[in-house]
Amino acid sequence: MALISMQCHWMLFLFAILLLFVTENVKAITPDGEALLSFKTPLTGTNGMLLNWRQEDTDPCRWKGVTCDRQSKRVIFLTLANHKLRGPISPDIGNLSQLKSLDLRDNSFYGTIPSELGNCSDLQFLFLQRNYLSGSIPSELGQLIELETLDVSSNALSGSISQSLANLTKLSSFNVSMNFLTGTIPNDGVLNRFSKETFDGNLALCGEQLNVVCKNDVKQSPKGIHYSDSEDSKKRSANSTRLVISAVATVGALLLVALMCFWGCFLYKKFGKADGKGLVMDVKEGASIVMFHGDLPYSSKDILKEIEMLNEESIIGSGGFGTVYKFSMDDGNVFALKKIMKTNDVFDHFFERELEILGSIKHRYLVNLRGYCNSPSSKLLIYDFLPGGNLDEALHERSDQLDWEARINIIMGAAKGLAYLHHDCSPRIIHRDIKSSNILLDGNLEARVSDFGLAKLLEDEASHITTIIAGTFGYLAPEYMQSGRATEKTDVYSFGVLVLEILSGKRPTDSSFIEKGLNIVGWLNFLVVENRPREILDSNCEGVQTENLDALLSVATQCVSSIQEERPTMHRVVQVLESEVMTPCPSDFYDSSSD
Image 1: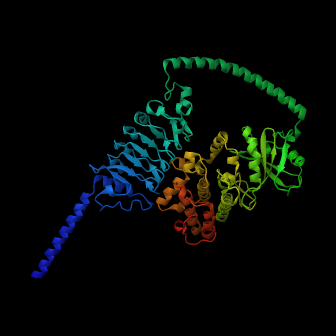
Image 2: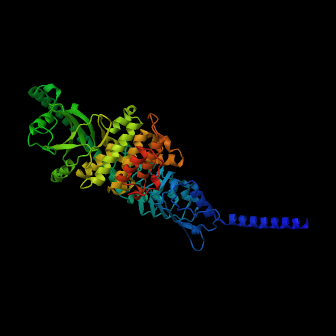
Image 3: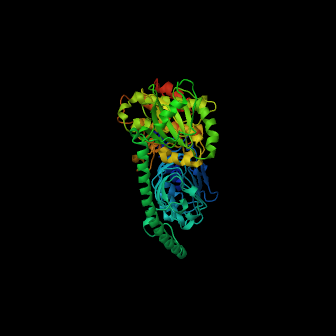
């Protein structure tokens, strides 16, 4: 009994020692360490970066990405850029009260920017660009009087720019471009220092920095734009001048209307009704036809005759690159004609050379460019007509005809067409404007990639503005929005967005996303974190196979990675689609090395 009693005492003693050891270690972790662990908890896909962030480690200063002050042992730098981190930013980040630099750029953070960051009174550098953050820019950031750099560009932020940010007198670098911000930019204080590029890509922003007058400024005395007394005087004088000009313009407009009526009557009498078809193509004088393939038995005269008859009733589409018309030849063959206005003198110099390259390309999954017509005021590109229309119309206006098999085949065709442009053309072609309206469908709903090469052909300021207005914003890769430089990997990103659009039946910037401050990529990331990615699927789609869906989601997820080096090549995408989607098998996409 004595031996047993002694053993019990020893066990109790050892247990007490162990308990004391554990307790001491629990107590040993610093408040900064606790804040960092709270920051880590909701994150997924950390790429091994945060593996040594452990509760039992008493010194967070040794953790990856963490730098501490040598004397106080407080965290002063948190550097986690470009590490595949996915999830919300914990409000506990605000407990790092001596933090001087927070760098979370180029990850997949979503949700809002914590207002608690306003507690980090020593913060000098804040880098949050190229994530999927939504909501507004917290006004509490205006408390960070030491802040020198604030970059939240290329996210999904909405709301207005807080007046409090104008008080950050030490701010020397500021970027809120490529978001969904709205309202008037404060033009007093420090924000008046920054140029237009700081705010670009926020279509609903206005103010002096963008040279965009806010609606409120037109109707009432301006709040966002301040004038001195002399400027007020000039403004009143300008208003008086405007009244005179307005009166003259009104009289002039009436005279113009009368003249137009007279001219219209003259034309009507001269040409008659002409069976309802008015000429819209300037092809009568100086026009010529160039055909790239010798398999069409038409003379230039035959083609010009049909083109001259085109009018508004012949229009079948329009977009960033021009208006599209449909016309038929006497033998019943149907073609599409894209009218592109000339933009400058350089246009003619490069046009023929570039079109010869595009006209030499023939592939099953590309729209065939037959030739073009030179006219005095425009270029008219002649394509094969595809009766199925474009994918945008099919998805969003008549989606009932697109069952699962049809969607899979469209994705496959688009992938093969794009892979051909990237890898098999000579020279290789970057499309630059992959979107659903540029995927055309034949009578069997087979996909053809269209408008390839046109972005480069029309590469000038006007064409870029037109393209963005046409609705391609949701397809653009983060680095392309930031730099304007297109690569094969920016096409891959756009293709990934296209796959998500086909799967979900929703446009990339659907109103349901914008209301939540997201786009379709942010929605996918949210669903992945919630472990319910299949919910992205269009509920109207019939015949779905879960093996196909999981493999497609794997492909799309990697294509829309915010880090372009992690995106696969289009050759690799085609390989995976053929091996795992067309013939389903367990997905090893994430474990396979890309080309």
